[in-house]
Image 1 (cartoon, helix red, strand yellow):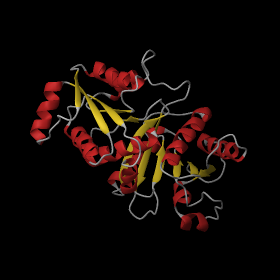
Image 2: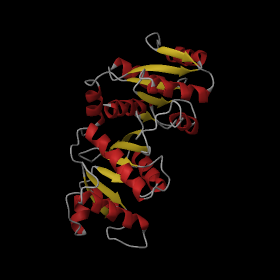
Image 3: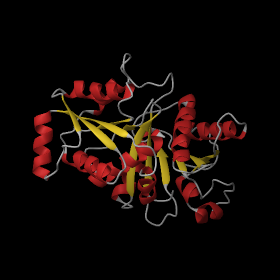
Image 4: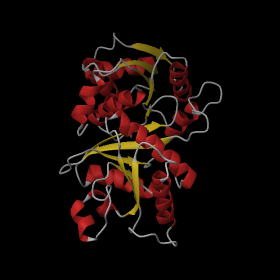
Length: 299
């Protein structure tokens, strides 16, 4: 898949996925959920202050009669309710509405009904459609793990590769980013990148090809890679960009939207079900694309 249009079309063809929305009294969230229902991408169950949900819907001129609504005015309890719906099999994905990210994640990690999948870490995966590129660019981790160590980066790569597979990228090219394309022992990002590359070469990380360290230009531009003499199947052709830590990833993520005018969607993976954790500033379109991405990841 090379565009969000393809992801949306693919999401219409897989088994129906139900999304449980926490604190659903948000115009963009309801707009995205209604569009997902109308286009056959996903069903939904809404949890939150029922009076407020219905008031927002009335203001939008939207009919919510086809959606089940659970009245739970308290945000933290609403977050826990949607997690319970997923853990009990009544829904297949979680979506954050007007609830604090900390409350949402606290519910996801709840020891009794949470969605933690063994010892696997949760990580954020962003998928971007950028003008001028012939492919989708997948970025991780830009929103979840602040300063992951090498074992955590291994899991971040594995989580991200599974999303790439769900999008039809059978053997994704993974670039581990750093400031330079040589191994510099004074830069931990370079050392980790080289370790990840060697681990993939020896079969410790499967389902992809990894190279690194690679600077951003050498990862996404064939011209830059050739000019610098950087060789390999990943150079200039990366499908996945693994960032060294959250700050650089978050800057890259937002730069795509605000400087490159790209379109981006994001989910959290590594749990028993995908978690749609969009920003409050994201448009309804971005939220719809994140729902479609979650539907594909849920397969």
